[in-house]
Length: 152
Image (tube, rainbow, N blue to C red; front, top):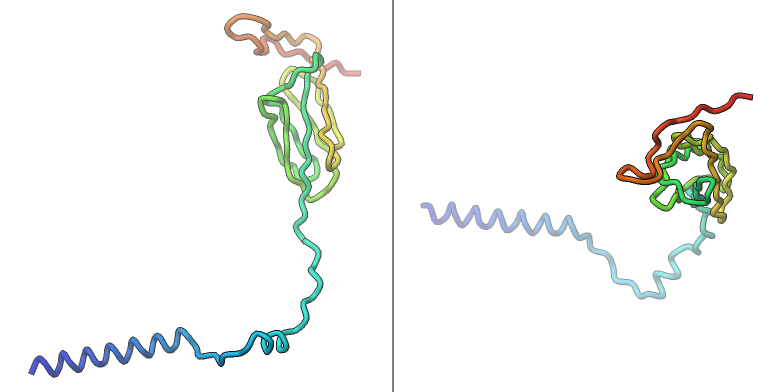
């Protein structure tokens, strides 16, 4: 009695599996490559890219021409902030070919820069009067005292 039930279940499983395969791969009539080309429509001209971005870059230097790592670069149009690397460089992508950025760093005056696509512009930050930077020793390069920006 168990053998006919097992056979029936096995047969039902095989029928179900073959039906599932038939649904996964619909039968398509074989066509020659020339027929496919004749049935397809001509290709349209490519649409202009909607998400074009431009790489804008620059470098932040001090009065002596040395790079300023860790300077803050604020993009005015989209309010994004970037930090310069160890060589004072920054790079960011923008949907615009031109951007205005504000560059700041502790102890230095703020500078504004107009960046253009394809140019690696450099901006020089001026040390604020009264700012003292440790020149030698264990903490060389660190700001000891931050000066005040002189108001005109």
